[in-house]
View (tube, rainbow over the protein chains, first blue to last red):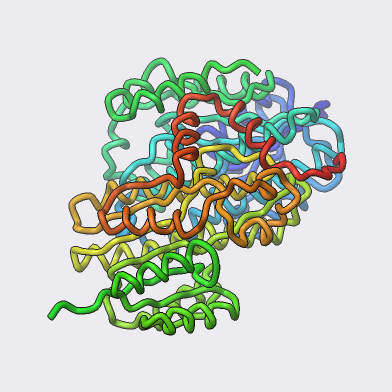
Amino acid sequence: MAEKLAVVTGASTGLGYQLARIAAQDGHDLVICADEEEIHVAAEKLRSLGAEVEALILDLSGRDGVEALFGALEGRDIDLFCANAGRALGHAFADQDWSDVKRLIDLNILQSTSVLHRIGRRMHARGSGRILVTGSIGGYVPGPYDAVYDATKAYLNSLSYALQDEWRDSPVTLTCLMPGPTETPIFHREGNDLTEAPIAEREKDDPVTVAEQGYRAVMAGQRGVVPGLHNRAITMLTGLVPESVLARIHRMGAEPQ
Amino acid sequence: MAQTHLAVVTGASTGIGRELARLAVADGCDVIVAADEPEIEEAAQSLRASGGSARAVRADLSTASGVEQLWQEIGDRPVDYMMANAGRGLGDAFLDQEWDRIEEVIHLNVTGTTAVVQRAARDMARRGQGRILITGSLAGNLPGSYQAVYNATKAYVDTLSWGIREELKDSGVTVTCLLPGPVETEFFHRADMEDTPVGESGSKEDPADVARRGFEAMKAGRSGVSGSFMTRIQNAVSGIVPESVLARLHRGMAKPEEQSNG
């Protein structure tokens, strides 16, 4: 058994999977979860890297899912927690089904907050720990046809920075990962309704690179990180976004502790 | 003869919502006011006493059934002005807050607001006309230490307003986001923030002034409005100051005076 434990939510594919892989290669045992069978496929791949992996299928958009996750973590010391599980939802706000919107809010906001509340208390009681929150650059660039998703990410970005300040004298660190569009299944999942969105066709960032930058940032206790800033994300944003917002995003990417 | 406009105001028993309802009556609208407390009846009575046609809905707008109750009262009548104002704050350090109270804030500020706005947007887009006013907050621009979840919910609301405004651009429906700074209302008492510098501050804005600016911007179909001149400056500053510094500034406003080490 390794000396350190990482927990990654939404780890079956995409950024979550990459974060779990990098954590495993860096010597962490893993507890990973997702709401689909693929989590077990992911677990097998990660075990082949030498990590002990516990894989859970649970739906973090419901209270039961959060309870099940923390049940599995009972009595374990958690060194790194990647609060990464999240969804998107395309199409016009007025055309979206309320149940889909509610589920998005429940997953991206309600349960993310619940998880941070619980893991925050545990890590403070223990006196150590690192947390990585997957926000998004979309939180600063409110978009039509992505409105609720961007708003949920604005929530996560804001909450992350607030908690960092509250915890500034504590041994627990929290890092906000804010990628631009990244090549992961988020664009292709049926429930996310993004397959017809223009963004699905555009060139996106490599999830391996994004995850690497995120991992480096959280292990260094950085406040925030905007991977891909100097290539695709910035190209996409320039001309669409006011200079003052661009400048702020630049600063977040470069800001020292 | 032009039909009388219908205005709906949530969170209207006190504060900004009550002032918005008053402005709607003065503007010649019929008004439906909603809140989750008995005071809403008194608020409706007071509006009727000033010559307006007002009905009260007592409903918990953080729940699906509450939102349904509101729409039952609205019935088939088209809504001309939807003022989604209901919301509450919560002070103290995040880890010291009780989860149940955090959840209430999210249900009301995020889920409930989204449900009300979506339903109104859908109806209005079908008709090709309507005005939506959402009470966000300058706090949406500031990561809020000692008020973390509240500020985050307002970041959500402010961002959502902008996104759907863009979507509805050519539909005849406008979305306006009201972005006040600290306002002299029940907010601080309800959020347990009376013992904080911002809660104690004598320089909060008058809710009537804030409401008037919001109502006028909504009628004109503008995108957003800050409260007073000072909060406008703060708004501009928050675009050029790093997030971490903003959070530190916020701590100075919102940290409770007798903070025990935790």
